[in-house]
Length: 47
Image (tube, rainbow, N blue to C red):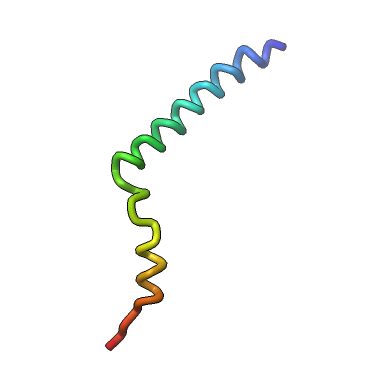
């Protein structure tokens, strides 16, 4: 039962850390154009 005093706060900190990383990625526009990389392979023109 004593392990819960460690695991519950640790899990809360982990959730906030993951949320902060996700928020940072959204603000840096990491998810704006997910299809462009795949489309560039299909539309590859080498002259």
